[in-house]
Image (cartoon, rainbow, N blue to C red; front, side, top):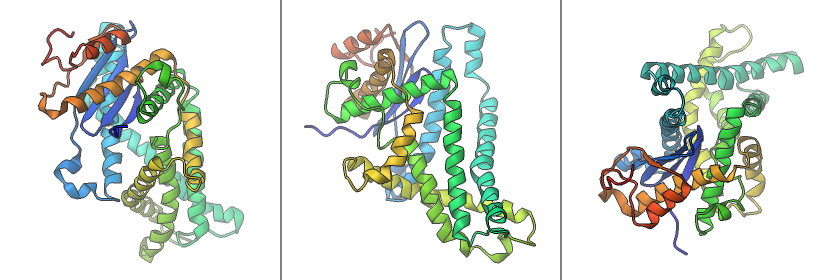
Length: 354
């Protein structure tokens, strides 16, 4: 069987993004049932800076690029999903870039507060409740509590937003993304009937990656943090802002942690059936029970369209001029027939596709 390219993806609003080695494709279903596809040539940073592809470097690159690609895909999907709503709202969804930037900054601040500051303070002062003395970064108990609180916040956050109807639909598209990729990896025809039989859980999922990041962070922090200078570490009689220093100094640790977590997920994805790895993978797989839902056939179609669009670009390569413009198809069958007839997803090369 011909080896398939490694493809990863992400659910977006009413759609799915797929990223292959040479392409980034997004498929979105509009309210009127039309399918909008945008594919473009993709070049990772490590193509220009080869050392970024080395083990333990590439994890950070993947994490940063996934965040950037995800924001771009979400912005595109929001515009397309609102295309058939009130014209003024559709234009507003294109939004002010300043507003989008401020939203991203606010999100980062909230994330640092929730996943760094709050766990740190909980771990430091849990010692008073359990031992009558404040724990410091030299205590292993501090790092264990810090990790447990992070996991609790992460699980609680995901479970809470999963109650929102629109997020539930995103989780359905997340399931569609996994099922489409499973179908590709099984070497089967990319049709709804085959995808429907596949699991909505995947060992290379970003949710599993984040779970591994949290767990690995506990180990790395327990080893690295005790080496901090005594003057900046918090403790009884120390100034309050030492807590701030420790929270900020933890942020650079995300670089080696992301590298280690990525290498584990990459290895686990290739050996998913190993009886030794399954127990280590089980927390991430279990977490996906919250972040994925069973998709409808229409949602599976979108996952397959995004995947097929990425594979189409892989087949034509970078010799065909990049388009990056959305192409609209009446339905899934029209998309399939266009590709079957030798059509293109590049409007520059085929003016007959709307």
